[in-house]
Image (cartoon, rainbow, N blue to C red; front, side, top):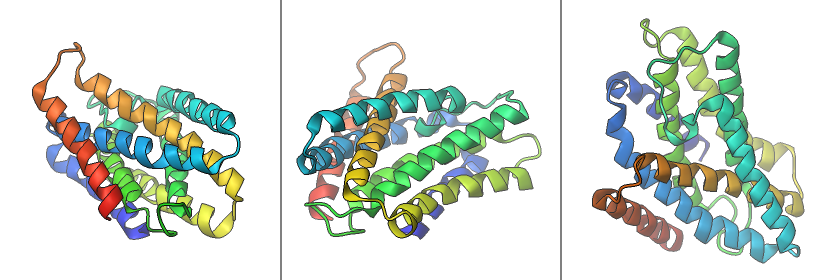
Length: 237
């Protein structure tokens, strides 16, 4: 699981070297990933946290806080979490550091989601959630590298940023599972918080994929395919 989390981000970032000038080429894969992530949040994470909690109102508040916390993070990331690349970025060194810190915080939180026991899965066997995070991390890494890449290409600085981003989710997984030893109640609140973040990311992908709010049959079909894939992954893996 740690290797999959790490390699998915590295591969997503490295792919920018070959497709970075064609950011529109990831539009439909991004819609699929957004639909998958949204569906997993709705059919896996939210039912789980609400069914296990004795205080549904508190869970709902944490989902809401997570949603708006993600909006705050995107002030620093400009939407890189949902594949929004900026090919002519003019960030200063300080703002680039803020971008990386915000992405690391988000990645640590999502990595922690993979540590739990649940009524539906044995520990470490939430494959549908792992697939959703991988599908989310690859375009995020692509957008990160596309945004920060300069004329010098893949220099040491860019590799360091990509590696830091790539290890963040595995570190979040290990911290939650092996180091912090969080209680069941704290884990539930953490999952609710991150589910709010996922809802923000996935719904933003849908909005940005149709800037003029036009109905697109291809987008709709890809979204349905992402949802059905999430359902199949949840029930059969």
